[in-house]
Image 1: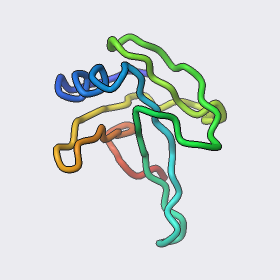
Image 2: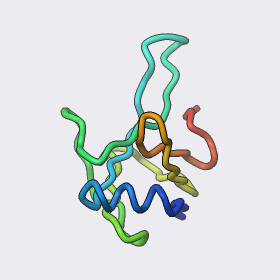
Image 3: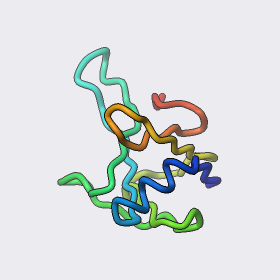
Image 4: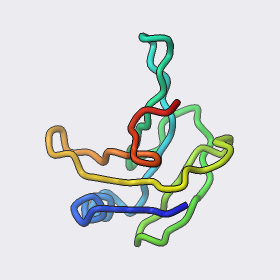
Length: 94
């Protein structure tokens, strides 16, 4: 998996402790669309495994994810300040 991280996102992750958790979240509407969610603290009830630290921080993905994406892009959103994750260029997972 190729990790593409913007400088501001990397700085934010470092400021928050150097760990990022990325998982797939199901929407309750629209037929259960799935999108990527991320946080610097693990959400409850999801088992994670370390996916690497090549970008200067620890990245964790769900243990039962299956095949990882070809690319994972991480960008910093300003308001509210958080990391947005894009899986092979998309925020929505088909």
